[in-house]
Length: 215
Image (cartoon, rainbow, N blue to C red; front, side):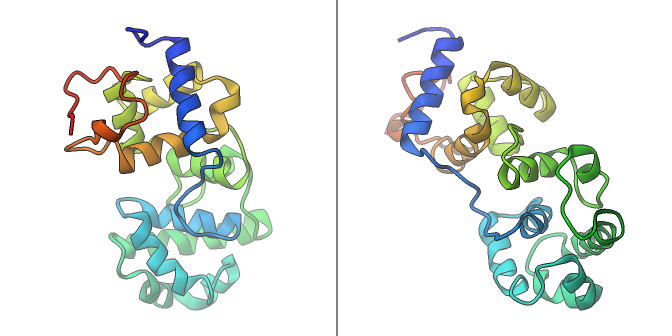
């Protein structure tokens, strides 16, 4: 075992995560970059499961910017009312759909500046869309990834931006496209917040968490 986090240790961690899940992807359900964008906007402070329950009814009815505009604000709200902050999310989605039509010919732009100019889209959402819809080596850092990176000492940082910067620096290129998904799934199902499942963790021997739980 290598005692301190370094390049070799990180590569071994990533290799094990890749071996366990060679083709990772988001748990949000979508069939186009636009559907993914809407799903990610809805996912803020919500679970993927909750978002999927809403979009499985919304997308068959409206899965283009114009179709959502045709629903109108109240019509859109009726589909997403089970999701937290649905009022503000609905307003942002309507604004985003209007901007996509007026400025991008109804298509989701494939660059960060244009994405972050859309209502309800911040750096994390832009990173998810660029990575998952377009295959860019961007890394969106959410609470799960922030926790995993700090707890394991894989890429520690005091905030999500610092963790993202560290990940982009230390993750080899061959892993960059998929590392977001590996880390988020690891944090969601194994390295959970209150009682991490260290006993079933495939990187437990490489992790530098000082309060490991064995069971």
